[in-house]
Amino acid sequence: MTRLIAVLLAALALAACSSQQSQEQVKRYPIEGVVKGLDARIKTAVIQAGKIDDWMDAMTMEYQVKPDAEFQKLHVGDRIAATVVVQGERFYVTDVKVVQAQ
Image (cartoon, rainbow, N blue to C red; front, side, top):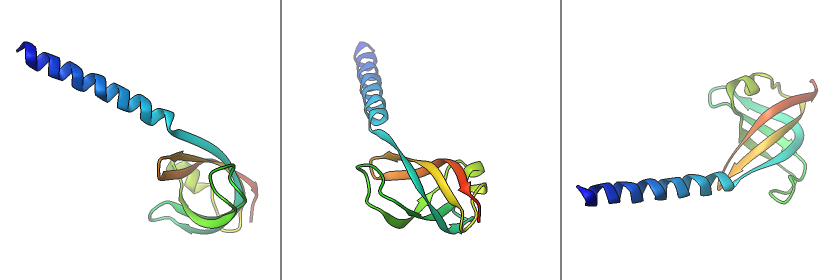
């Protein structure tokens, strides 16, 4: 029984370290761009954006938009300012502000 408790405590400690480490890897970058396309089915927007800090050069690419309420703000042709949240190889756009509507 003591051995089982020790194993469980070790597992919990590892999980806590892993959770803290993954939180440290989350980065947020400001993004400005123009919405070129939308896919309501999978909540993605194709955004033509300028350089994003040290994360990405200027380019047009597809971003997932979270939460759904942020996606609902968008229309093709809108100029936006938002935040890109990056964790490892996963990323999404949030905190969307329409700067100039279509």
